[in-house]
Image (tube, rainbow, N blue to C red):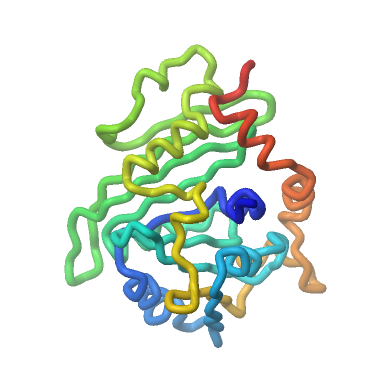
Length: 244
């Protein structure tokens, strides 16, 4: 049994920050929790309980989880919010972050962010590399932005089939080049000595996501699609891109 596979697609969308666990925690505690009310911090001592805390995806409350990894240079951060800018915003605060997303048959994206300069006024410069393959209706759209990284398979970006220009295999190979293995349970360190941290905010992910009765509105249809999809099978089927 694989926790990462069992909790997909929640586990197929997240970020890694090149910083210590305590430094990441401090950003959430000292900077991002101000002015939002009482923020709840809950330790989790197993990987399964950590990702279970993000489920169901329709919960309107904003949640983040911070997890140590076996690569001491990197800390994992996951969210229950779609396209959560906070995940890459950690790069602006701490200097280096990578965000990834893999929804087989729908979206594969890689965002590598390195802060290059910082001023006392809070202004900064950064090098950002974005690679994204998104299905729009019946067609695929492939885009890139920023300077190419040394390990990229640039020849793949010229493939005739757009849906094969950036595949799940390529995404996770790029992450592996950075020393990151988000598909492997053993890559994450969650135990009694180093529990993961679940951060719950007393605010909805976005106001337009919530109905008057407090239930999630915007993501109901997507949540149904997520629940009905066999993500293990989808990932295997789309590993090298769609056949057509």
